Amino acid sequence: MLCDSSTLRYIALPNSENRKVILVPVDCGDFNYRFYLATIFENKLLGKLYVEGEWHESGDDSYKEITSFSIDEDYVITVTKKSLENGKNTATESIKYSIDFDGNFVKQ
Image 1 (spheres, rainbow, N blue to C red):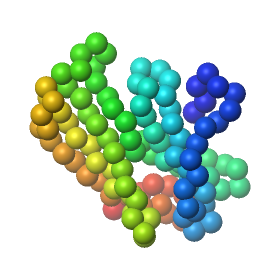
Image 2: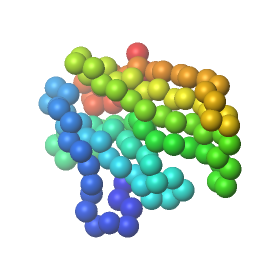
Image 3: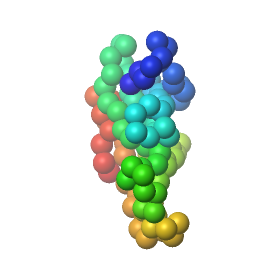
Image 4: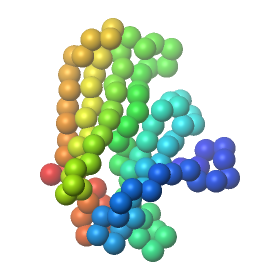
């Protein structure tokens, strides 16, 4: 998840059990606003999940998907995707995830 930088940028979140959880920006490529949650144990990547950002067709932003997330005190992760057409919300979908013992993100 390194772009053109030699340094990995991330935000450390509170651990889930004994697994580290980090928020990693992926701001290279076609979209400059994307974040992934990742779980790490003993310096190994266990799982990753796209949780925040914007998506639209190249050169046409009349349709967008905006993704955001929240984490509650029990480490239930809610990822919400809103579909916008010409600036109006046409659909909203929320999916809840937990982190299993192996550090994978599992739909609830």
